[in-house]
Length: 461
Image 1 (cartoon, rainbow, N blue to C red):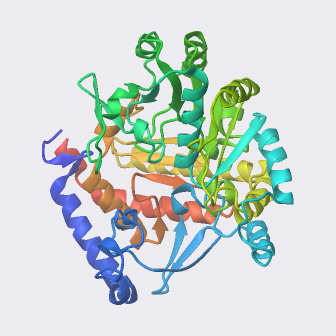
Image 2 (image 1 turned 180 degrees about the horizontal axis):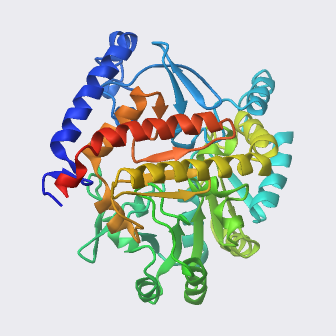
C-alpha cells in the first residue's frame, strides 16, 4: 500500500473531500454559524461540555428538536440519527412512555432522597430483566462502575483491578491504563493525573487468555471489569470460548467479574449477559436505561451482598464512598420504569436487530463493490464500519485501525447527506423508531462517500 494513504485512500483525496464537505456544511448552517460558530459565550471552548467539540463539523450545529430517529437543527436541516446521543437515546429520542412518565412526575417533585412507588417496580424489573437480585441506582455509568469496584475491593480485601487494553468504562481512574510494549502505563492524554494508576491496575489484551491467567495468578486482583465486546474503539468481538474461560479463570483466582453493558445493551432486552448466558458477580448499565434522563444501575449477586454485609458490620460509621445526592431521584426512577416496562421490549429489540443486520449487510456490500479493504462488525443494534481489514482481536489492533482524518471526512460527508453517526468512532445505532427507509438512506449516503473516496483506488494499492 502506498505510504501516502490512510485506510487505503490517498491522503490528498481525503483532504480534498473534507475541504469540500466543510464548505458545504458552512453553507447549510448559516444560523448555527451566526449563533455559535465562534463558540457559545460563557462556556469553556464555547460548548457546555467539551466533548461537543469532538465532531467532524467545523462548528457544532444547534439542535432545535429530536423525536424518534430524526433530529432537526436551527437551520431547518433534518438528520436521520444513528448516533442517538452516543447511546444515551438508543431507544429513540423522547419515547412517548418516557415523556408521559416525566410529565407525570414533574408536577410531584423531582428529587427528595427518598424512594417512590416507581422504585418498587424498578427493583423488580431490574432483577427480572438482568438476573441479579441486588441493585443500586447511580447517575452515570462512571459512578456505577466506581461504586461497584469499591465493593469488589471491600469484599475481597484485594487492591487491584484488571482491565483489558483499550477498554472504556467512563472516567473511572483505574481503567485509564494501557499496554505499551508489554508494559502497563498511564493512558496518554490524561489531565491532572497525579497518581500512577498502574499501581492499582493490571492490564492485559482482550482475548488473550494465557496473559489473563498469568496476571490473575498474582492473587491481588479484586475484580476484572469488562465490556463483553470492546466497543469504544474499533469494535473487537470475543473469540469463541473467551467468556467461558474468563469466568472460569476469575472464579479459580477468587476474583470477581464485573460486566459493563452500557454499550452492549444493544444486544437484547437483557443485554449481552442474558443473550449469551454470562454469569457476572457485578453488572453495570448506564446511558439509555432511563430513556435519556441521566441514570445508571449496578447490581450484584447474593454472595457479594452477603460478603458486603459482613464488611459493613465491621466498618465504623462514615461515608462509604458510594452514592451521590441526586442518585435515584424521583424523575430518573419514573423514566427508568417507563423505559424498562414499555420501551426496552423484546419486540423493540427484534425490530432493531433485523434493521441493524440489514444496515451491516448494506455497508459491507458497498465496501465489497468498491474494493475497499475495510470491514463491518455488529453487536445487536450496534454497527460499525472500520477503515482497516478485520476482524480485530484486541485493543492494540483496534487502536492501530483508527484512521482519524479519513473518519472525519466520512462523518462530515454523511452529515451533509442527512445522516448523523457517532463522532468518536464509526458507530451507528438502530433504534425502535428507525425505519427501513432510514437504513437505506444511510447505505446510499455511505455508498456516495465511499465511491468518491475510492476513485482510482487500484492505482494506489
